[in-house]
Amino acid sequence: MHQRVDLTRDANARRERLTGILLICGAFLCFSLLDCTAKWLNHSIPAMQTTWARYMSNVVLVFAVLNPWTKPGVSRTVRPGLQVVRSLLLFGSTAANFFALQYLQLAQTISIAFATPLLVALLAGPILGERVGVHRYLAIVVGFMGVLVVTRPGFGMHPAILMCMLSVTCYAFYNIATRKLAAYDPPHTTLFYSGLGGVVILTPFLPLFWSAPPSALVWVGMVITGVLGGFGHFLLILAHQRAPAAVLSPFIYTQLLWMIGLGYFVFGDVPDRYTVVGSLIVVASGLYLLLRERRR
Image 1 (tube, rainbow, N blue to C red):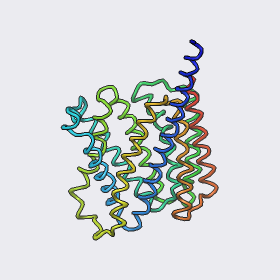
Image 2 (cartoon, rainbow, N blue to C red):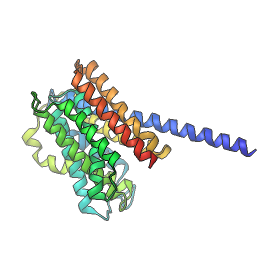
Image 3 (spheres, rainbow, N blue to C red):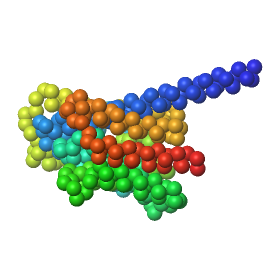
Image 4 (cartoon, one colour):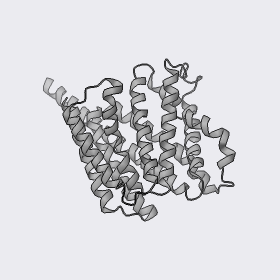
């Protein structure tokens, strides 16, 4: 009898983990479609307008679900200053990434973006007080070598690469801020504040960069950016409710496949050998880092 109960429990756990894996793959498909849509929109409207649309539509969507009436106390935060800084870091990361997407392939931007976990691991020591061992440093050094292969500084590097690296830096600090806030505010409060920085900063300057009048298709694309961002984060939350981070983390790198496929079918982009080799180095170092963290 006990054996049958254990088998049923194991089967349910495996089913939950598999569901979590499928959900996180769906989340990163949403994020890939978001970048693809932003790159497509940048052919018709300024990057700042795309960024504003991404945040405005996302804030409206989140506010429809999380607001002081449906979720009393959702706006109450113990660390308001850190919430503001985190929101601004997310805005800076998105704006820099959308600028870079005007000139770079999707595969290039995601290959560089994969350095984010490595940078977070490096910053976790001095900022969060986490121990950084030799193996972690080794993975970080190898990963950044992969980024250098992709960017090839000094060999005709496109200036947009710098915007992409700025995006990665902002996003790494955003992750650090998120981890610090987890000790003070509930997740729904942090989600409530996430997109407000971009809306507050960009809305007053909207007349300066608004490209009017957008076509109906461009309007749809502008709304879709927010929907994809919000739905992707929703799937991410559901995935982490069903499977531990150690199981889900390696599937982050499925985004490279999505980005290469979308880049080819939508824009006809084929990544060069430097992007392929560099991205494989970054992915390998990231997986090694995840394996070490899982063992610890």
